[in-house]
Image (cartoon, rainbow, N blue to C red; front, side, top):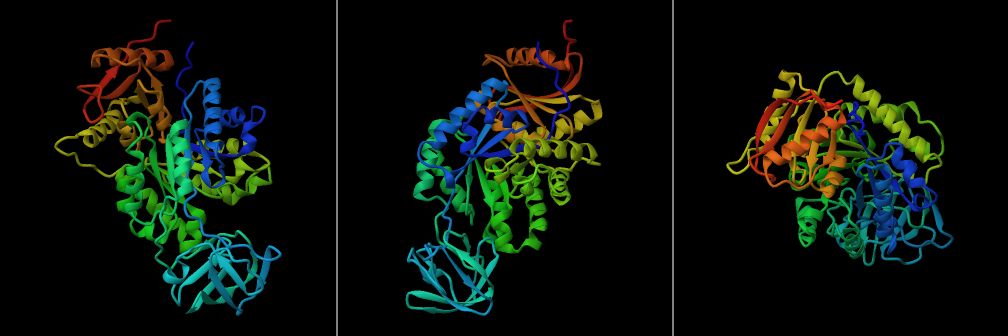
Length: 480
């Protein structure tokens, strides 16, 4: 017998997996603890890793009996310190150092940086930040073949350390040749989301959209634009409008704009997500201490709860689940924090009024559905969706009511795993709206909504873009 719909956790959990997830039932345990979307870090994937891990997710999905989304996070053009003789060198504040492009072995006060356009795009006065901003330099002079920079904050420089150039306009493409290979493997394996790193303008999102156009519509992943560069913050609304999902990538973002500015920018991104009806994932170091410890710090608990209170659609774990010592505990902790924070949230986050176009009234219909649900005392909102778009719009309306999405596509169900407050069920493909509603009623009754008042959002045809109807219905009581 089907289980009744219980009070769901509205906020979704994204968790990164690595090689450990391929051993001894680890992935099933991770998903059972509460993971909704599995993240694959493309920067650490070798050929074959993506396909193999997606296949494992599908096996685990069957064991759990619920859909699981897969996010392939493309590595992008990561800039790093080149090789160093002895692997490290130590710089002190005030040192004058030399930076050369390429992978020339460095030593002493000279290192290389793996960005070919370093000399043409990084000018005197620009800042260079190494190792998540722990080491800071200011460029004083551009010479033939190198940059001369003064050390503002010193420390140990290690080979392979990340390099950020926050005050320089960079021309590096957002999608590298390796990313293209990873994307091909991911599309063949069946991913639901693709993360775009190093986004600096809406053109980067459009370029990835063109790459995805060759994939069949029903298997075309949603684009997750990672906001981690200062240019992306400046172009936030344009990037959001062109994206399917946004990610607050707080690691590089903190290096780029300064740690103190990150909380305000995070809230701005969440606000734009509500405005544009785009889901937002809050990521990076949410429970970082649990990489080593079985319990989080109080500050980490407040961080996760704050993101939930501010309306994040999903919160993400990275090293905590990929390489940490307590991955299951980390997921369970995040699940508990989110549930308690949702229960404490005093009021729903208001969504802005949205306008319709002459061809698509769906945004207005979703606004009306929320009002109808509130005034009728409905137990749930039910949406019939062919691609997930209507469910996505409804999820950004800020209502606390569960949204039950009903679709004939398992691929759509997997995409819906990122949406706040959405649960989904699959029905057979219907030849008429009446048949679709009858199938949906049977599912709702089997899951505890028999006899309940619901607000139903549907259309004159089982097609996305035809959503034009809101109905308040009391379902038939379930047969005992």
